[in-house]
Image (cartoon, rainbow, N blue to C red):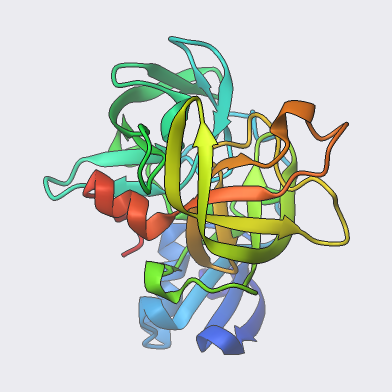
Length: 267
């Protein structure tokens, strides 16, 4: 019974027909015990960490999460991690924005090496994405918002389900969590002479005039426990958040994983 004593609250998310169980001590054995005890399927429950101390996005995280600061040790510069994924051979990858690196670049997180870029799709088209090969022990389905392991990703949105008026948030290395409303589901963005089609444009909400800034690239765009996209860029980025209002441009996760021929570890 010691496993059950770690539960600090139980709630529901009606829109997804899920139980939300908050654990004081976040261990796989505790989650397994609870699911077996109440005969819960993974699709019926989402676990959250209770009373989690605030940890910087730059701090070493093991396993990795979407929303962390990752550094290109080969070329310099920081971007933001997205979800973990797998290929058909069972190899594990960390997803980010394709313009953040080239094949062979080495990435670090929290000061230690996590892996090399294995695939990139970032020369125009519908996806701005890359895959960094990582060890299985670093892969996870967690998302960092204002604290570590704040959300456990349960599913991904299908590309056909994206719609104008949808309210989404993103988690990034530079501007943290910002939210807004999708205003265009077929937006064309131009970066470095390349045109990216089928992008999504998210207009900032009333709480902030700046959805995204340099360093947020690659970060997760999400709706609750559903992963929706990969931060690709923003409008008026040349001025930065100090000078311009900036809306978010993102690649849909369905398109990115399709082009990389990968699937999320939570699927």
